[in-house]
Amino acid sequence: MDEHLHQIREQQRASWDKFSGGWKKWDDLTMEFLEPVGSAIIRSLAPQGSHAVLDIAAGTGEPGLTIASMLTDGHVVITDLSENMLDIARENAERRGITNIRTQACDVCELPFEDNSFDRISCRFGFMFFPDMELAASEMARVLKPGGKLSTAVWNVAEKNFWVTAIMSSIKNHLDLPQPPVGAPGMFRCAADGMMVELFRSVGLKNLEQHEIPSTLPSGTVDVYWDMMNDIAAPVVSALAAADEAQVAAIRRDVYEAVNRRHPDGNVVIDASALVIVGEK
Image 1 (cartoon, one colour):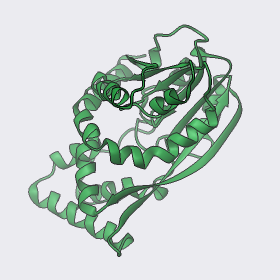
Image 2 (image 1 turned 135 degrees about the vertical axis):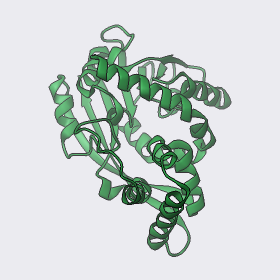
Image 3 (image 1 turned 90 degrees about the horizontal axis):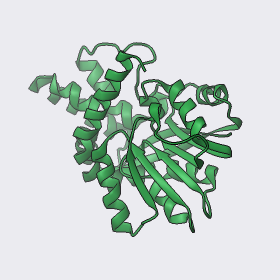
Image 4 (image 1 turned 30 degrees about the vertical axis):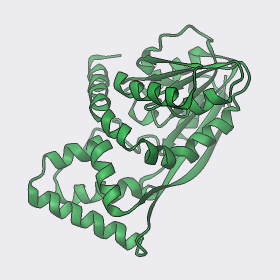
């Protein structure tokens, strides 16, 4: 990995460590939000019995913990770039009485595992942020056993993810933010139809499938949505930190108006959409 990509990785590590407290605070809501996608990954992998499973970019532990609970005598290695996030994953495992897991802080582009080590690999919402997606996919394929399955989820196009655009569109309307380079890590970097299928094909995976998985963020109120995004979304926090009080107030007003227009009944359940891509080695 070249120096520029190494710098991106270290910035991401620091960011996930910094925001781990917010993810712990909102874990119940975010896991409810992401559960349909995690379930789709699990269905596509069909983990069972003595499978050895690798969960990459697992954050607070899902879908790895649920997979571990399904195995009779198998195990799951739960990995993430951030040790702070893995602390939360271990706490969640202990609370749920799940013992057939271990955690490993590591970079997906340099996986510390032997070739052909795992029967299944899951990766929920990691690829968009990997500095080198091709290397990441290649590393996953390397450690996957022949006949094993790899399943990942990425966010679909912006138009189908109001939970992101409700706040980011308002921020962009009020602040002069620098444009990221084309292909830079970001929420919708992998949203193009078929992009991940072709990436998986390029590293030798076969029997490839892509499925759209809709979900909703059941925040209930705009206040909950605003507070959550300010606790877990690094781009939101970074942008608002550079704004003055008047700008923050205007952004917040616009976000509340946009969300309330979508949900005039006051029950704020915000649309989201992901793509789940599965392949076999």
